[in-house]
Image (cartoon, rainbow, N blue to C red; front, side):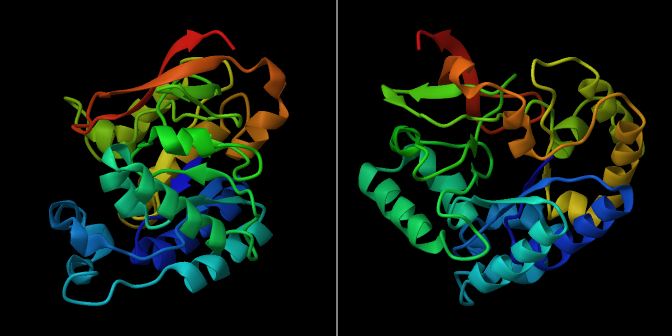
Length: 287
């Protein structure tokens, strides 16, 4: 399970709720924490659409109110997550800024963001080369070129089928990418006949389709951690009853010889139920 922590409320309320649920069912997960600021007010349409999860106050963050800093609270809660057996990583610097700007940014912007992230990492409880996720599955060629072992353990910024080594516009990553394989809760809810009362059954059915390294389910501390915690619990019950195990993303790599990972191009595309273009695992290319 890949958990995006992208808002102040998701950090304060959603993550503790999910940790209590995961502890009850004895399952580990990977939490990706923000280290910059909550810039929810910079994208009012998105924040308005998610107001039940983020709260109305978030509409003013970075506009009419100072943008709350994630750093100290993220470190405190990340330490708690790690002490409970979960994997911790980072989700960009300021998650919303990366989600909105990364794909079309210039090289100077990407370099500045990577420097901010580098300065923030390496301080407890985060490693100097943490796992990196990106909100809404976005990337940039310069980010791919920076994905080496001295910076990141692995990345999770695309939709796909199995772990791979990414290539984008001539830039090659040297650390594994672990893509999201399953639909998200909001995506599934946009399908005909799917509603809050049965969405867990549809998601479970999707997870029964075999993938080479198993599935990765991406969830949000805002949504599954607050408004849809009951859906998350139903999914856990169903997954706990099937063969296999629920793992942290980093555990996937322990079962793989990374030297044998295929190299794939990245591209942009759409997945059912998502109006936005996201990064997709594409064709395999020579190593």
